[in-house]
Amino acid sequence: MNRIRRPSDFFSGLIFLGVGVFAIVQAIDYPLGTLRTMGPGYFPILVAVLLCGIGMTLVGKSAAGEAENPVTVSLWPLLVVLAGLLAFALTLLKAGLFVAIVLLVMIVGGASGKYRPLASAVLALALAAACVAIFVLALGQQLPVFGEWFDFRFW
Image 1 (spheres, one colour):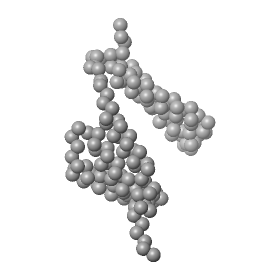
Image 2 (cartoon, one colour):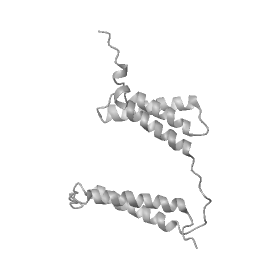
Image 3 (cartoon, one colour):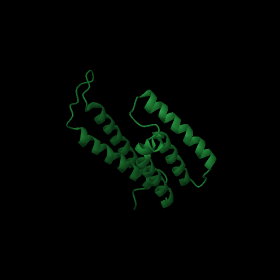
Image 4 (cartoon, helix red, strand yellow):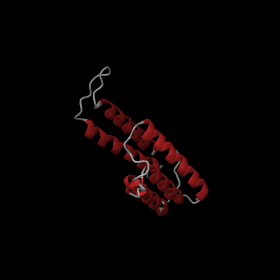
């Protein structure tokens, strides 16, 4: 008899558990401190324990409830998202944050079966502007808004 009735919950739970255990192992050497004076390891271990709790809940939930239909995984959306992330990583420093985010959103939009170029372009421009406002202007991150590819000096 198969005890795992919901494989998606089971495997999601294993991922949460794996990330939580990895984070605990990485942060175990940091001093925890106390509630009043928290050390550098307090928050990472707290989050890691919460991740482990979520993982155990999902693994336990996978044996209960109705069995789910088998899930089919389409390779195309995965490849498109990976291509978008790769394009973002390769263009961030040379083209700048604004262009890299626009490129990322436009490429990743193709992972959907209902790709609408105009809607994707509006979303891309809005997200790029918001990210520039938040990360560069408000938080002061040292990221180029427009990189050296757009440095038009004629002297």
